[in-house]
Length: 385
Image 1 (tube, rainbow, N blue to C red):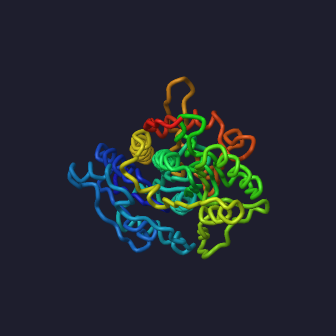
Image 2 (image 1 turned 180 degrees about the horizontal axis):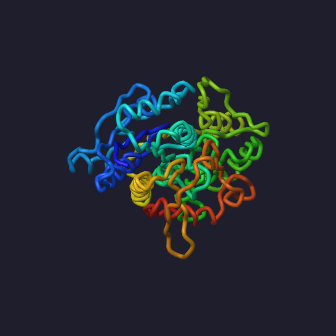
Image 3 (image 1 turned 90 degrees about the horizontal axis):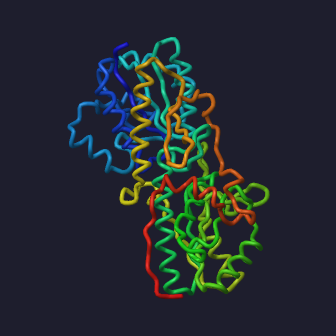
């Protein structure tokens, strides 16, 4: 079946989302069944507006530049697709001779992918999903492209902040990570440690309810021992009732915007313990840094893009390219196709076995799972005991 291929980005970008786009274009060029490669400019909304751009014939120089470009080169969106929008898509694809559609995104995007697959079943359009999220909360896979680079960024950033705090140990530094309802990125800060007393000293993930008294007691213990304390905390930290520890500021659709959790915790330390404290929130820096991209993450992002093209050309539809870790001492993966129904809006939280008994650290098992994804974290020198 000959026709055009359309790539759609959804949700928040990652440092390697354009690497997946690179993989799609590279693979598409190898298949005579694909005439043109279109990018939906501005995500799913770009489909409705029929805002398509031919990106398959760019020069090799521009293609290679995708591997170094943060954000989404074709744009993304969190567009709320209506039933009428879905019904219109088969005809839109027909007008542009689009036979293959690839959705690259997270939970919400995979939900859209599944619904587009359903409305296109009678039209013969092949619809495939490609995983992407820094949050690492897509179910049915070992990990998602985008997470490894975000994890490496937070690990190196916490390691560097830890050296700063160790140099002048007079305050508590609270570093807030992205990740919404899942603590995968926050937990990755533990990769910063080379020695037992290295930062981070406390890790707070949303899978465990926040206990103010226990938190303050742990801060006090580390402050008395070390002088300087580094806390890594998730933006989605909640109390025992499952409510955010800071009030919401704004909500639209699935997205809820809260005040800074790190600022709240720093304020608690100052008011309740009388210890100097400050908060840091890397925010978008944590998902857009090309300087700290994980090479494993980039390679796997390219791979899933290529595999999605192969699957679509082979007549596969209604599935997402997965990542499954192979057993053995050395790290390796394969890429099984996962029915899209098993992925749509199913959220993968940090498992209990990866969280320490006191709920404020991670286990060695988590670190063993994480290390191949982030790579080596630099060593530092200190003459202090």
